[in-house]
Image (tube, rainbow, N blue to C red; front, side, top):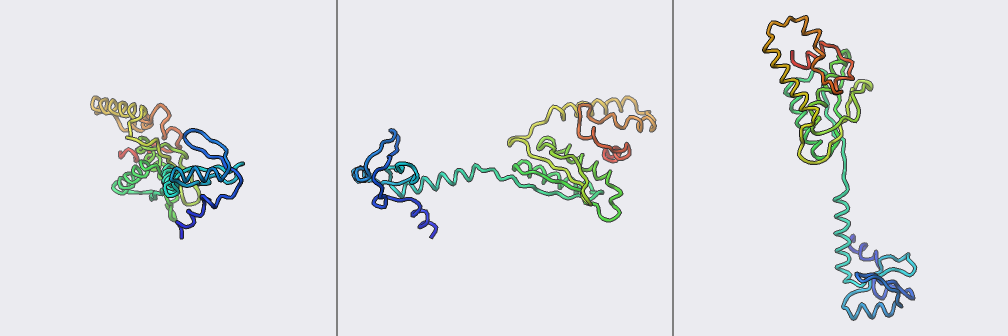
Length: 238
């Protein structure tokens, strides 16, 4: 039934009853009487296929009708393949998500972004856990930071009701490369570790005063977050 509809979509040969038609081909186009166009089709062993009935005069091609339908089907398939379908994949966290669960969800988020999908990660606060909304913000910022090679943040953590969500859009398809920001941060972290080795007697009060020193100086995700030094230390595993 489906094929019959496609075949009846175009008028062919004797079904074309207008006085004249415009024939288009590789060598240009010409307007001829319909009877002459039918004779040309017979001589070439092909069909006269009307491809634009609303034109004045209607536009036709000299082509085997089966081949023409195949070309149309192939073209439609190619156009459909080129249409990018972007889905929004959701990933849910609790305010006190464990490291194993975090790593598992991070792995899936990377896969979603590599496939060209967006990611909406959110922390769901159940009952009194809303008291830990600051901890949820830290978690989402860490999540976005760990995905910076694969996606870019479209919306920073936003609390709506019992959910705090962040939106991450995929970067261009291809092998993920380290951004300059990440390389700079890794270099600074390496230097900080080296300095720590050289000064093992640093007091705890000094650590608290400088807890924000490891935040990327070039405008990282944590720069705009209103989070306490204690929450940052928890994020760093201290």
